[in-house]
Every structure is written in C-alpha cells, then in structure tokens.
Length: 302
Ligand code: MN
Ligand code: MN
Image 1: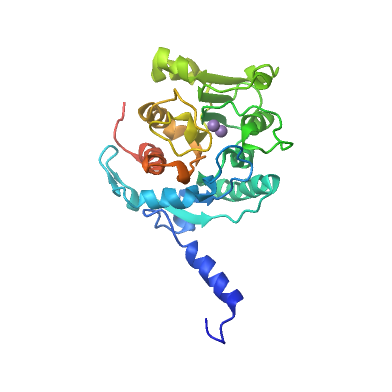
Image 2: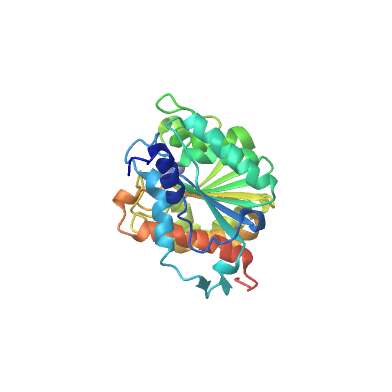
C-alpha cells in the first residue's frame, strides 16, 4: 500500500472482492433470478463446536466441484435463474441477526423469489420463517431445538423450533430425524404442537411411510430447513453438535424431491468446516442442487 493508499478505501475494495465469491452456477442478476442464494456467517450462540460461520464459504467452494449439468433432473444449473447475493453482514447479536435475516428474506419473498440460505447456525431460521406465516415448515434435525430460552437467549440455536412455533402455531411444523431432546423440552406442554418424527420412527416405517402419514396435513407452501446434524455423522461429520444414529442422505434427498414443488424457502445450516472430512460441505452443496433441480425438472421423478 503506497503513501497515496487510503486503507479504508482498500478495505472496502477488498471486502467487495471477497464477497464476489458466488455459487458457481449462480450467474443471473437478482432481477432475473427466481432462486436467491445468500450466506449468513453467524455462529455466536453455538454451544459445543463453533465455526459454522465459515459454512457459506466452504459450501460455495465445494459447489465448484459439482457438474453444472445434472443427469438425474436433466437440467443445467447454469441455465436456471439462480443468483447469489453473497454473505450478509452480521454482528455478534443473535436477535439483531435474526431481524436482519427476516429483512433480507422479506425483500426476496416480496419480489416473488425463493430464498436459499446457507448458514451459519440454526437460530437464523427464526428470522426467515417470519415471512412464511401461511406455510408449513419441514425441518431436518437431530435435536428438537425446543428450549424456550437457552443461556439467557431466546434466539439461541437450541430454541429455533420454539421460535418457529411462536410464528406458525400448532400442527404446522414437522421435524424429521429427532433423537435428542432434554427433559425440559419433552415436558413442555407445547412440545406436542410440533410433530417430531424421530430417526427411529423413520427407520421403522421408512421415510415414505412417515411422509405419507403427514402429507395431507402439509400446506401447499412449505419452508424447508436442514440442520445438517439431522443426517447421520457418518455422512455429515462436520457439524457443531453431532448426534449418532441419524438419517441417511438418500432419505433426506427423498423428502426434498417429494416436496420440492411446494417449497418456497430453503436453508442449509450448522455445517462446521473444522470438523469436516470434505463430505459435509459436498453434501450441503449437493442438497442445494437437489432442491433446485427437483423443483425445476420436467422429468417424472416418482
Ligand atoms: Mn437445529
Ligand atoms: Mn441440530
């Protein structure tokens, strides 16, 4: 930096350059896009392993290795109306970050577009769901995330299903893969206002059996939220709070494919690069492709 260098200007320049990293196939402008990808590098309430703030960058890096053409859906993602607006600027305050996510998601949904959010930790879904008051919500998660408050914070990631219940109300939330709940959550009188489909139940009845049981209760508009720890650690080791005996990757993809055309908001969260072997980032990137591909395909998938 020479003597004429205004470092403030350079910092702005550098941060603009840094945020230029986009999902490889997201080449449309916002105005022409139908799918709007954005990252939320926020992990300040994570209790066990931090680092999901680096999730968005690592998912984008993994995505670089995927083919643009997808033979399962016979679509070319680079031809689909996808844009990536980069990462939103967050601070350490969970409540402010959740409000910011609400604002960003509100702009996108009011423009008739579909938000695709990459986390970051699960608390941020509490913001996007506020723009889906008329929707059903489907969650993939090992944890019930049903504490009313945790470590003095209602926007802790361990509370997000409770926050969603505040917005959507009874019988509107379906969480798949549950295998970890505290006694306090389990005994909460509101616990049964959410349908927690446990990982054991899915193993017993099959994913299709579980889905057909609830399908009639799902609205035509769905918000779909993936906490990567819902998937078994053997497929997705890079998460903040791993929990054994989880869902398999194919079952999660099946749910996405089955529901895709009703999904109007989508997120992939809690991916924590420090603990990954490369599989979790790839799976997260692939699930984004699977969502958009199965929503846009002209092929009969079932
Ligand atoms: Mn969660
Ligand atoms: Mn979880």
